[in-house]
Image (tube, rainbow, N blue to C red; front, side):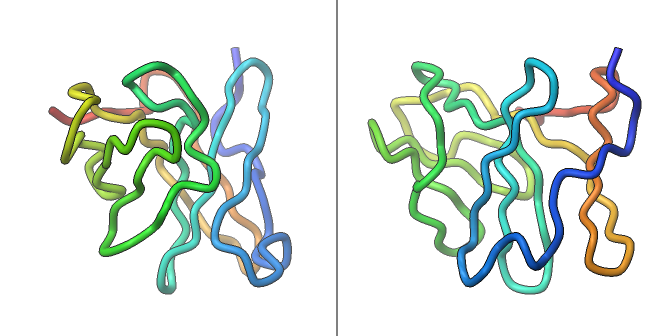
Length: 112
């Protein structure tokens, strides 16, 4: 089992970008920096399981670069198809410049 609060990135890792892919065990994550906050989601579109890395970020949403499904980054909800299921979100904690995510499977969440 993956212990909670795993270090997933630092602010310096972004180097001008807004997205980072991270692998923790078998879990593929996408760390997104939007505005002054960082979010951690499972890097898997719920439509066909493709990576969301490189998807367009706009107005608190990410668009899958493969088929155009759009997701709300705060709730994980599928905003437009072809995806209908929500993304899995993980709680995030900042400690200075370091970004931690709680990857405990019982606490990663989705909202319908």
